[in-house]
Image (cartoon, rainbow, N blue to C red):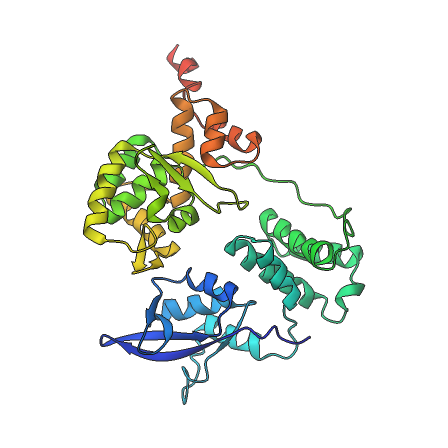
Amino acid sequence: MKFSGKHITLKHLLVDQQKMIGLQFYQDKIIEALIKELPNPSWSEEYGMVYIQNTKENLNLIFSTFRGVAWVNCNYFFKNRVINPDNPAIEEGFKDFQSKKLRKCPEMYLQKLVIKRYAKNTIKNYITAFEAFINYHYDLDLIHIGEQEIRQYIERLIKDGRSNSYINIAINSIKFYYEIVLEMPNRFYAIERPRKQQKLPKVLAKEEILSMINHTNNIKHRCIISLLYSAGLRRSELLNLKIQDIDSKRMLILVTHAKGNKDRYTLLSKTLLKDLRLYYKEWKPVHFLFEGSPGISYSPESVSKVVRTASRKAGILKKVTPHMLRHSFATHLLENGTDLRYIQSLLGHSSSKTTEIYTHVATNSFRMIKNPLDL
């Protein structure tokens, strides 16, 4: 099977006396979307390419981000160098793309994902999962793979200890190829899925969140944490916010192209609005509300780092993620008596069943119950 043709060339750059990794590539929507996921990507007019800071972590991240999506050409970057055998991410990346035995995701598969406007993370997960599947059955033509081969692969994933979530993604990626790309509806309708695990969302107390906000380094970080909580935003939704999405007259925030490619409105806090105005005057964002470089969206990892740092300074022992702030938003609204249907709308859930999970963690119903030890 021929490779899809997508490739990125890495080069050494010196920008403001700092060592950088240059990423040279032909214009491509998938590559451009994934590059925005890297830490603080910037554009160099001098070199005519995007660059990020030259660190071992960033180099490993490039390989993991584009593995299965594009070939990473390191002929210029590692010129006259021996690849460090202690760097498994780099070595594996080279082996993957240099090996003639590995089959790559069909170009039509990539195009369908883009045309249907699947989320960036979904595209990456589908491609990775589908390539793992087609290389497990390397000796079979894709058109000849049937339910028996798929079940064998699922059994292998179970024996390898893969999570139910990963197995579901694998099944979805396989069905996407045959049912959407090849237009063969319900070809694998009878494939059984693992039982879905129902995990309760992890929630912070309001006092903990306020302490995190008060322990931020600057007004930008303060606004990031406040927005995630007060508007119930996903991390990707926060990063996609434009300046014009903040409607201070109606005290609403417009969330566009959210999960499921849906738009919605959510709440704008009066307290936050004051901080946002201070932030805008100080940082002067150009396009996105939060930017790593002028006109370029802040990176997902940077947001996670802001949340982790603030939680550590606030003395919170458990691991805190951006999504926990969204869970806390929904739970606190429910505890304060907000109708579940309104919470569903603010979160952008398609089904009320998804929102109902918060009834299991809201404490207002438990407060009315007298503990038998205290009777």
